[in-house]
Length: 311
Image (cartoon, rainbow, N blue to C red):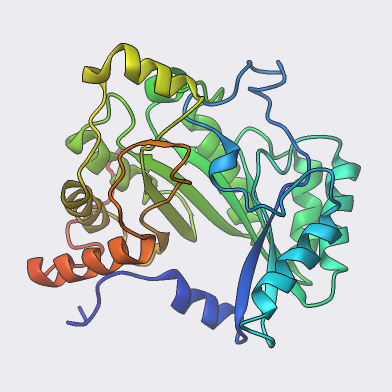
């Protein structure tokens, strides 16, 4: 193992895929979720408040084009030569009439300086008809599909009202990767009932999926969510990590991941006015730098404890 290797980072991977400077621009294209509109449930995931990651320009009264142009103006002040990825981030961006969904993607790609798209969605919302279109789209532009996995434990998924099973995650990820599409996953560390040993098992299980990238972030309690109410009623059911605890947890987790899995991020930051806890008072990059420093102190690296899951 290269003595300078800590983990397989997303920035390096993206530069290899796109030899130009790129920035994601988030879009709220007006989609919903099947666990919000009654198809599978109501109210959405218990932890979710989409305000926590939507920039100010992500308003559904604005078209996809208008949101992208506003995002471009924001970034172009500092980086006039930047190119962009349209990031369909809010809610479930493959859920709805297939022709309508496709039209949103094509509108984004028609905007000047947009060189690809990233699509955030759920594992139970990838119909074969749309996947066939995405397979063709992947041949003409940069494309990544990111699935909200959140947990590999079905009991946890039910508790947080995800409305899908881990078996559906396996199916969606395998079909997408088989189509030759870059496939990402997203998990939350610290969900109720998921302690250290369960999370180490999760890392090994996820490593068996044909994922290209993985995003991690800490459980955050957000105002106005059902989970915030659950915490108020029974705080003993939650372990809210300190920054140092979380850093060591992430490193333990990364040690159990296969070494070629691209790690896009370790942490998320919600607006202070919405965040109940944990409030570490640190920027995302500061946590990342502390993770790197701690990995060097521990003389460890991604995949150090990785073993294939048997059976």
